[in-house]
Length: 316
Image 1 (tube, rainbow, N blue to C red):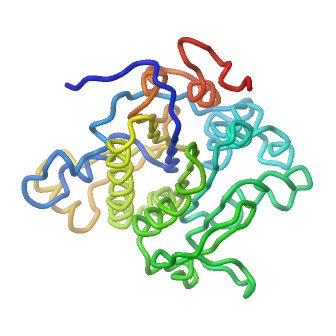
Image 2 (cartoon, rainbow, N blue to C red):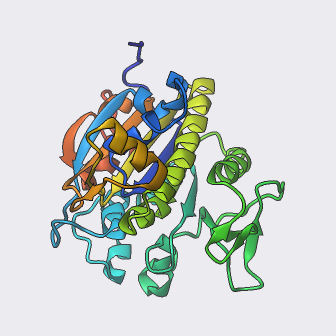
C-alpha cells in the first residue's frame, strides 16, 4: 500500500506500447528469474492503477498491432489500415499545441508495421514535422540520420534517426541503453514532454512461438519500465503508461517439472487467439484516470482529463 495524490496534471508523459503483451506474461519474469527476486525486479507489478481496454474497432474484432495502436494514438475506432487513418489528429499533435516536446521511439517495427509507413501517404506529410523520431533499426540510406547510445549529438524535430549499432535485424545496443541515452537528450528540450516507446519485437517473437526470445525481450522492456519508474520518483509530475496491442494469449505449464522444461526450452505452452481485452498499467500523476474498463480509442481522453477542468487542458 502507498499514498497517491489525486488530480495532479502530468508535465512529463512516457507511454510504452508493447504489441502482444498481456499482464499474465509477467509470470515469465516472476518464475523465471534465478533465486529469490526482489520486489524492485517486478516494477510493472508496482503500478498505481490497472485498466483494461476493448481492442476491437469498427471493422475488426481482432485488429492488427498497427491498427490497434493507431486507435489508441488517434482516439478513433474508424481505423482502416489505409492512408485515411492518418488524416486524423494523433495525440502528439495535441500536446505539441501545448508546447510539449514530443518524441517517438520504435523498436522491432519493420516498414509495414511502423508509424513511418504513413510517409507514403500525402495526408501524413506533416505528421512528424515537429516530432523527434528514433528507430532501433538500420537504414539502407547512406545519408540517413544516425544515433548511438554513447553519442552526445543533439536531435532536431522533424528528423528520423536510425540506430548506428544495427546491422539488418541485429542491434548491438540494448533497448535500455538506447532509450536512456535518447531520453536524457530529448528531456533537455522543454520542461513538458510526451515520449512514446513502441515495441513490435515482443509480438513478433510470440507469433513465431519463440518463447525464450520473447522472455529475453520482456526482460529488456521490464528494465525500461524500471528506469522510468525511477525517473518518476525524481519528478512527481510524471505519468508512466504501458499499453498493449493485439495481446497474445497462451497457457503456461501447470506443474513445476513442466515449468522447468519451459524455462530451459520453451516447451509446454499452448497458444490461443489474441485476447479481446488488453492491459493498461499506469503509474504516477493522473494514473487514477486509467482504472476501469473502456475502449482503446478512449485512452487519449483519459490522458488529458482533470477533475477541475475536464478536457479544457486543450484550451490555451
